[in-house]
Image 1 (spheres, helix red, strand yellow):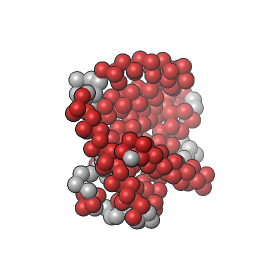
Image 2: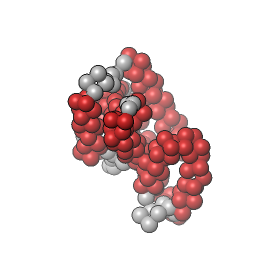
Image 3: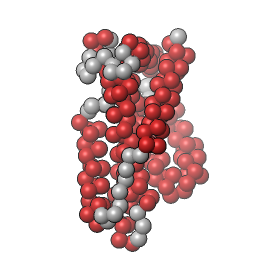
Image 4: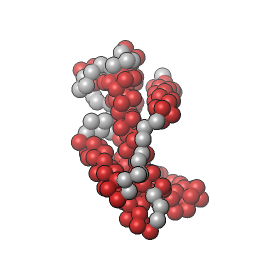
Length: 216
């Protein structure tokens, strides 16, 4: 609240929400949503400064959408966003769409998806008393990464080292679990890829419609 960061609030709520969902199922999410409402109302900037920041951010997203439309397959190129707009995207998903196109964003979201899938499988799929530590670590990494994926909605973090450090931590987690349970594996399937393509399409259309409604 004191940081006046809307992105920080969303990231905190998403991180805590994973634990609430795991412990109390959907009841925990509903209760968490009710408790989160005052934080969202009290936190973040207000007044003209907030309105100006929001409008500027939306214009950045609009510019990214136009870049993707101009080169939908491969984008405008890595690091080229600010060559087409005076500010960066302020949204990692828009940045990936604009700079790397459909091919690049599919590879990028696949990395994000598999990172999430591994720790979700570890937190919920490992059985037995001996796997308790792995389940705890899996849930902790899942919570942290969900918070990260939420936070980068408002940050140009697509290639930032911090994001990829999280991915590397999950890679280390996977290797560690495999040493104790060689038969355990998490794979990328054809169905996963189909889901990713659909998710990317929905994500782009959602951002497009939101910007269109807000900016026109």
